Amino acid sequence: MILTALIILLALLVLSVPVAATLVVLALMLDEFFSPFPLFRAMGDVLWTASDSFLLIAIPLFILLGEILVRTGIAKGTYRSLESWLSWLPGGLLHANIGTATLFSATSGSSVATAATIGTVAIPQGKEMKYDPRLFTGSIAAGGTLGIMIPPSINLIVYGFLTETSIPQLFAAGLLPGLLLATLFIVGTALICIWKPSLGGPSVSHSWGERISGLRNLIPVLALFGIVVGSIYTGLATPTEAASLGVLGAMVIALSMGKLSTKVIIEALDGTMKTTGMIMLIIMASYFLNFVLASSGVTRELTGFLASAGLGPYSTLMLAILIYIVLGFFIETLSLMVITIPIVAPIIIGMGFDPVWLGILLILLIEMALITPPVGLNLYVVQGVRQGGPFSDVMVGAMPYVAMMLVMAVILILFPSVALFLPGLMN
Image (tube, rainbow, N blue to C red; front, side):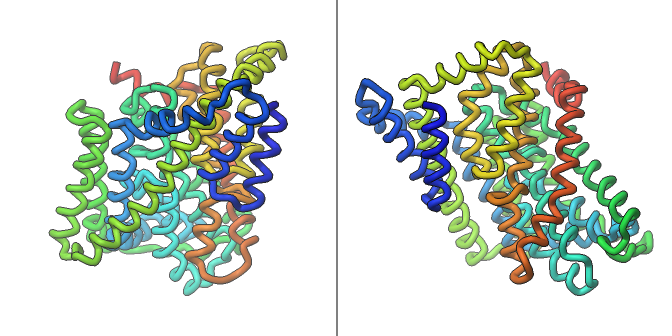
C-alpha cells in the first residue's frame, strides 16, 4: 500500500498536477483501492475542520508583512547597510546576500519572499561587478531558506499546528539554530572563496562613517523583529496577534518613510491572497489525505514496519532523515511537511525525542529541499529573478550550502541544547 501511494504521488507530481489537487486525487484513489468504507463522504467535514483554526490566521498576516516589506523597498536599504559591514570578507557581496537574508528572515516568515527580495536587490550588483553567477546565486537561494527557520516562520506555525506543539517555544527554538546556520554559511563561503577566489568577487572596504550612517537602514527590520518576536516571547501576544501587530508596524514604518501608497497596499493584498490560497488549499488537501491514510491503514502499516525493523531510536531517526532528504528532491516543502509530519512525528516523538527539537531538525531538512533539484523552489525563484543564464548555475552554486546544512543537522543531533536552550528559559 505504501509503495502504491508513493508511485501515484510521484506520477501525479511528474505530470505537473497542482499540489493540492495531487493530494486530493491520491486520497480518493487510496480510498477506492484500499478502504472498505466510503471515506470520500467525510471530505466536507475534514476540509472544514482543517481550515477552521484561529492559529492559521497568522499565515496570511505574516505573508502580508513580507509583501509590504518587499513592495516598499525596505529590504534594499537593508542590503546596502549590510554590504558595507560584510563585503570586506573573502567573497565580498556573497556575505551581504546571506546577512541580508538572515535579517529579512526575522520579519518575513517566508523563504520564497526572502529569496525573491534579496535576488531582486543583489543580482544586478553581482552582474555589474562580474561575480561568478554560480556561488552568487547559490548564496541567495541558500540564504532564503533561513526564512523558515528564524522566527517568525510560517512553516514552524504549520508544524506546531500539525503536531499540537507550542508555537512560541518553536519560535524560540529556531532562533539560535537559524543564526548558527547563517554563521556556517558565511564561514563556509569565506573558506570556499579563499580556496578558489574566482568563485567570489572583490572584497570591498567601506569607511566607518559609511558603516555607521548605514545602520539607520536596519532600524525598520529590527523594529519589526522586536514587535513580532518580542511580543510573543514576553507573552503579550499570541503568534496570530503578533502577526497583526507586525503588519500594523510595517504599515506605520512604510508610511513614515513615505513609501506607503494605495498601489503598494493593493499589490501586497493581491500577493497575499494568492499565496495564502495556495497554502490553505495544500493544508486542507493534506488533512484529507492524512485522514484517508490513517483510516485505510497506511499509517498503521508504516508504524508497524518501523517497529518490526527492530531499529533503536537513533537508527529510526537516521532513517527518517534519509527519507526526508530523498523526498526533498521531488516534493515541494510545504507539501513535504503536511504529507509526512503527521506520520513521522508521532513515531519519532514516541521514541523519546523532544517535539520542539524534532520540529527544528525537520525544518532544517525541509530547508534543504528548497535548494535541492529538481523541485527546489528557491532555485526557481532565484533563476526567475535572474532572468537569463543556465539554470545549472543556481543548482551547482547551492550544493555547498546543502553540505553546510548537513553539518548543521549533525550539530543539532549531537547538541540538542542548541535548539532547546531558549525554550527552556520560557518554562
